[in-house]
Length: 87
Image 1 (cartoon, rainbow, N blue to C red):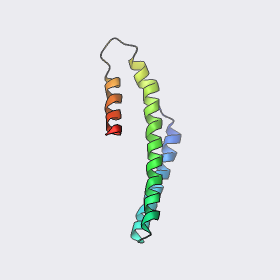
Image 2: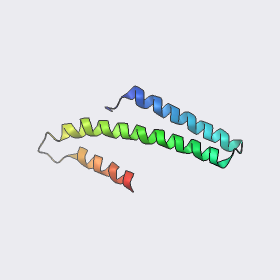
Image 3: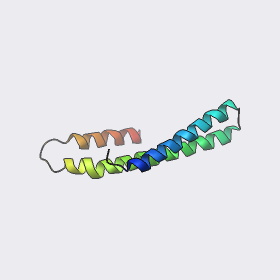
């Protein structure tokens, strides 16, 4: 992986902590809107982490793959993940 591993790891750990908090909130029968806001916060972190990883992938792996005349599986991988994000 070419993304900043420390940055990505920290962010995923924060999201994991938020999800642990969501579980506790559910167990404590907390107010629905508060639970929903915590879920949205975790989703936002994961979305940003995914963006960071995909940017690094395109900048490095796909960029390197463009320097060949062979069919490029890296481009197909990037297109597949974009399809998943859009659907």
